[in-house]
Length: 85
Image 1 (spheres, helix red, strand yellow):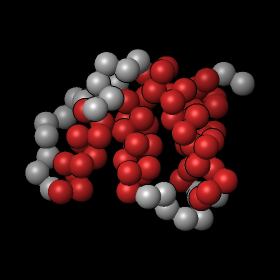
Image 2 (image 1 turned 135 degrees about the vertical axis):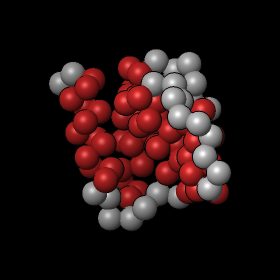
Image 3 (image 1 turned 135 degrees about the horizontal axis):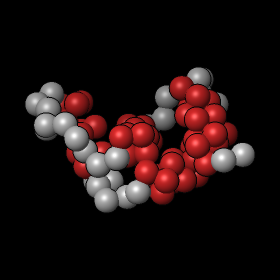
């Protein structure tokens, strides 16, 4: 299975987990997903608290290649799967 296929499959599983990961885990998954799918931050900094936290988490991934972000996302999701699926 290619990295793209693996990433797409795992991302679909994460959306269907029975319980939501902790805020920090959720931000980490979100930021890796955004970096993997969009690359470096490409939007202006938002003002809302939640939106700003998501933005800053994504900004923290700046410079990571999209493939590396996909690998890190898959690894993290696999580690958390038994806890939340």
